[in-house]
Amino acid sequence: MKTLWFDITNTPHVHFLSPIINRYRSRADIVISVRDYVETIALARHKFKTKFLVVGQHGGRNKIRKVSKMLNRLSALRMRVNGFDFALSCGGFEACLLAKWRHKSSIVFDDNDISPNWMYSRFASYSFFPDAVPMNILLTQGFKPQTTYQYRGYKEDIYIADYDPDSTFLDSIPYRDYVVVRPENKMANYVESRTRSIVPELLRTLSNSGIRILYLPRTDSERKYAYDVDSVFIPRTTVNGLDVCFFSRAVISGAGSLTREAVCLGKPAISFYPGKRLLAVDKKMIQDGWLAHSRNPREIVDYVNSAKSRRFDRNRSKDVQRSVFNKLDEIIAR
Image (cartoon, rainbow, N blue to C red; front, side, top):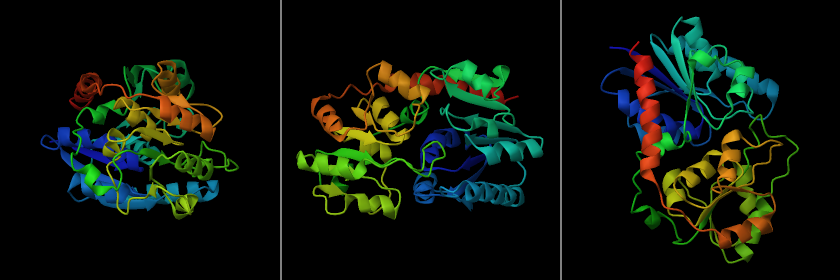
């Protein structure tokens, strides 16, 4: 029986890797490592119901500290993660490099074409990207065409295919009609440190327009954006992001995963991502009329008031998942 090591470094990766872990749980030995960052550990405990290793921390905004934490984590993984046949991760530098050192195979999933993917691309044995990301960009970043698999659809489809709405979710929040707001991730290396958050003004504009807000800050500094703003609810515990999106009126986020989850669930979604370039997957969603982008709070409120939900097309997500799983089965069986 083969051993599959799953390395999780960010909250969305818990959702993404969960159906893959479940698929192979009965036919492989599973090892899971999790980086301590925001809600990742709490969500992993809720999702996996099994033991996992907690290894390393996020380095924050400072580039020197970020690199230092990354190298420290890599060293710790070398000591704590033993025999495995495949390392699976979402854009994981540490997992790909450790697999290379051990002469093992790595499988990486990604959809971000503007991150410094060159840090791991040459170490990855196999990579999976949505076909919205142009192959010429991936080749420039160092991915190998013969081991890069592109699929139709989005990374979020792969786990949304197994999603069943929790009918009790609305009992845990004070609103029946609400929008979701998630701030920009200013610790991400693709967001300029001088970027001014629009969240304080956005929250006030939404509240003054009579719109109730389910607010999802990552840090205490982001929590302060909601100070003295009416009609804002901040969950005290980790919540299922898919339920948050599914039962909402609209999803507004400065980061990518939550808006793409909303889009795949058929919900109106507005990105106020602050980077100079949008991701190729976001451009495709905008082109198809599934996603809007604005950093003007008044425009965002107007969009919320006019946008309509689409039907949740589970079969589309199932098709995406099936195509990825079939290729994954083929790789792991080698």
